[in-house]
Length: 472
Ligand code: BYC
Picture (cartoon, rainbow, N blue to C red):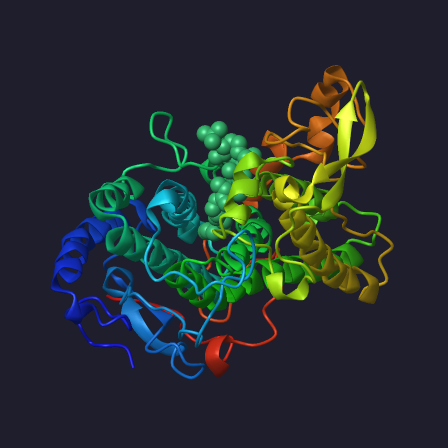
């Protein structure tokens, strides 16, 4: 079981007084950050029915209770150790995993952990105003569940920084609370985490596509030779699954409602006239968040990725499923864009590791889109949602600086400027979304007009359960 200390944990924190003191020193700064940058207007007078981890076994990590958000028990939880775990890939394949950080890989590991850590508070900051536009109490509770768990993921990375990186790690932990999403002078590290999320269509697409990058990156870090990093990220993955559930079912419910409204509007009618979200707008938001999340996998050809793999720091998702784990003499066929056309060339597999992970990611996203399309099919619609080509709207990697349409056809800058809002959300689309989300729905069991209710409630509670209680 997790200890009932000031900082709940399963890492025997009280046995390491120095570390405990350092983390207890960071804790009030974290709480201050949460109050300043966390869900605005929901800090003091709201009780939220959230899941809190009380142990890492299957029964214990899903304990439900009402809490005020700043009183959530953020803690440090590592998945159980694997007996005699061995390094699973790279130049040190087969050797015992590390319980300490090797000096020669200290900078690289710190950089990976800081980059991962930076995304967690960033997402909370991006979503901090959404509570004022929520489509229901059920959705409001889900938003806060995602937010508190992203906060816990920050704790997970800060624990590693404090435990294994000395003074540098402590400084990095402070800076994780100082950078701010969208801040011009001190932005978050990765681009997608500086984009605003001010409406619920963006939120659901973000949790579907960007949290899924979280899944692919955490899967690759859970292969790491640094055992505490592997164990930390393995436990984070259990929480990540719920975030993607929120995104996928959120969009499913919007699609369901859009189909109903289209029928009511007589199919040919504009669904916006009856307050729904049209499929074109849904597709544009899908295009936006999928392409931003492709960027999060880094450049196609990357010496950083090669070095992370060679040194055993970051593997492939499901490394076990590959036949060969050293990848020294292997090649990967990659599409390059040269002189206006795409050509396929061989790249050393180690240099293509970002692309290998992106392949896994695209496959996982495609399966989700297929599930969405079943809803359209069930309603007899001929329209389908689709993933844009991976060259579309890229700002990182070898396609950045060129222009492609969603089918992956190269176009001129002039055509892009003329047509970009056919493919990406326009200011008018955002204005429309904000207009239908202007009034939050706080009445139990009620849902905004543009979204269908969920199939079932949280933790076997009814759909009209009071998931967020307001104190009088
Ligand atoms: N934005 O070799 P390259 C999550 C930089 S999400 C801005 O191509 P590399 C979550 C790069 O830093 C998962 N800059 O890339 C989801 C480098 O800079 P320098 C987060 C970018 O290093 C939802 C240069 O471009 N976890 O958990 O192989 C809610 C060339 O780099 C970007 C991780 O990311 C970008 N998108 O790969 C909450 C895992 N991409 O050296 C949470 C840890 C690249 O020239 N991070 N650059 O200054 C990594 O493994 C790697 O840093 C990356 C980049 C995969 C992100």
